[in-house]
Length: 133
Image 1 (tube, one colour):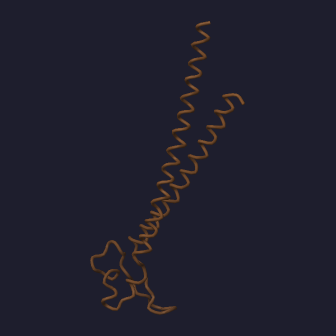
Image 2 (cartoon, rainbow, N blue to C red):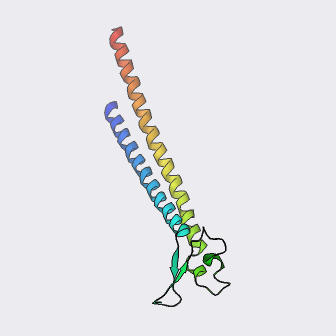
């Protein structure tokens, strides 16, 4: 196998690694978006199945002792509808996904850059050898 063929294969692998990194970062972004939706948007809680008039609840994060946080003390159903463990699970799942995505993206970009640098150095050596001969 010639060095050029090996270099093209190396760049192709680096591009695939970089694409996997971008994909994982996109998944992590979706998880962060889901976490933000769970924390920032108001929601409805049904008191019984097929409730005609569900209870309107404030968002979990932007409320100061509102329906979402004090619901159990007042006999409200809002506190049980969106629990903190679900939000923390989504947030916890996004950490290793984003870390793996960042590592793969960085690895792919560095490999591709180093390959381009090595090719430029070989080209400069070829030009210098042609001038010297």
